Amino acid sequence: MHTYEATVRWTGAGTTGTTSYTAYGRDHEIVVPGKPPLLGSSDPGFRGDPERWSPEELLVAALAQCHMLWFLHLAARSGVVVSAYVDEPVGTMRVEAAGHGQFTSVVLRPRVTVRDTRPVGDDELAALHRSAGEHCFIKRSVNFPVRTEPTPVVVELPA
Image 1 (cartoon, rainbow, N blue to C red):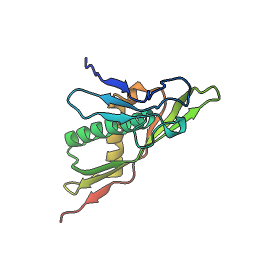
Image 2 (image 1 turned 90 degrees about the vertical axis):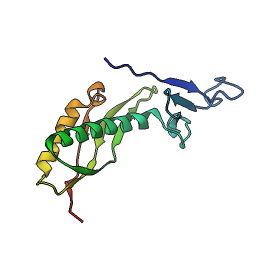
Image 3 (image 1 turned 90 degrees about the horizontal axis):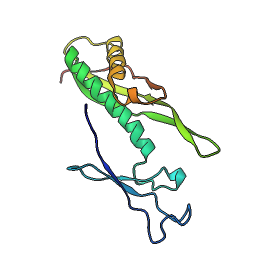
Image 4 (image 1 turned 45 degrees about the vertical axis):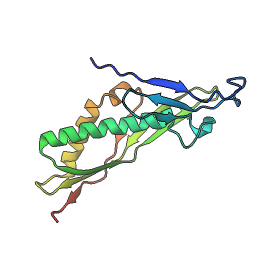
């Protein structure tokens, strides 16, 4: 078993606190011992600070990060030498009239560059992506679809 702890401290009370929906700030800090604070807020559409991370952005980033880390592990184990990896994930969230909402999907779009140490094709990378998705703790914990749409493999040729 692994346990993860953090402190989330609201810093947006100002002088009036929550006297009304528009009276308080959404700013907060996420602190994990030994790490720099992560500055959070709500999405700007919900009166948040666009300069800070929203929970929705963090969820999408966590899915991409988890997938990437599993992919790199599985690639190393299978002898695929990855020299670059970039993902630009997109999450879609629906907000209902009553204010309730939920994510409806996240699409991961990784671009992987491999070294020309042995032939590596799109099919092999697709299999690694599938396996990474099966292993990703975060993906396995959400109740909406997370799709992976990788771009074709880029091969880094020797200099």
